[in-house]
Image (cartoon, rainbow, N blue to C red; front, side):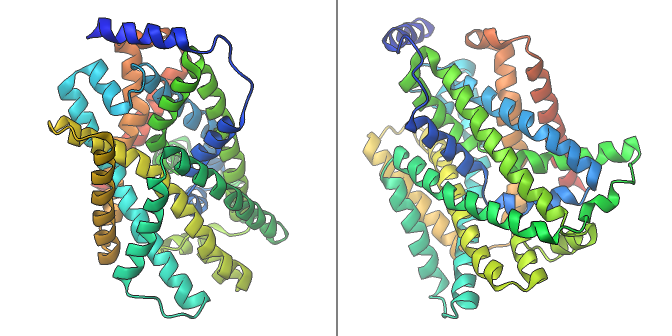
Length: 426
């Protein structure tokens, strides 16, 4: 089996381009696709969650944001690239760790991502229904019909293929970036110090560490785009062969730089406008920062724009997470012993996704937040710990051993998982 994989790898490498080509439109599309998966609805709650800890923890989190995001996703990308040609993450796990481990990781991978897809289905339906009722003053159609039309519309994009999904997401990124920039700049005249009021109060080391411990998972998952990494790595290997790791690292670095700069500018603009007490009030009311700002300023422009921005944010993230969830479900179907053709498998997965997402969006259950929290430790384990374990154990990843970034990623992963487990326990 290993000999066959090595033979395939050699043939693939021989066919790969001898030199790395210059940056092209496809690289830009992927960069924006990664940005689109990561920067979604969670970003609209990040100023509240990150700002509540005070000034100094937020500054430290801002400094850690790029290395936490980049090194973790680069590690997962390298893990997928270490497999044979065309192998997605579920197949690479089986190749490196065996059939039983492959089946277990595939199951965990699916159940870590799929609940988030359900949450986006509910959020999308709620956002559009609220927009129709409060901004357009139109009575929304029955929830079952509205959710079905919305999810079917997004799955229509999915049916056009993976490249169509990435292109759609990259196009959606532009208005989202403009909207975030507009809001951040709009708030500048309203800066009143906000969180700076806590800058003179340097917390005790134990209190600072405790705040950072609980806040790191918020930052980690606000920038998380692990569901699309497998498809990204497979496409990079197909395009660039032996140069795939170099080019994928370049794309990841640019995508993460864009994420960090844009989001932190938005976060700091919000926390310089609102006091810690107001941020706490927004959290208590369970509002996104957009909704709270619209109420705070009584501004009709923000009130009208907020649901539109949320719609774009949720749609982008839905499409990106669909890629990961569908990979997991396909892997489970194949590992169950059934091997339908590629087209039939796509149709089965799309139909199952449509039915389950539609039912959950129609029922609008409140338990989904808890499911997302339970899935958090699994995502952290797959994103942070599994690639680092593979670097230590898998010969194909031996060249990445001994790097300081490996220790950093492992430490952040353990911190994120322990904090999430602690939050569940209290």
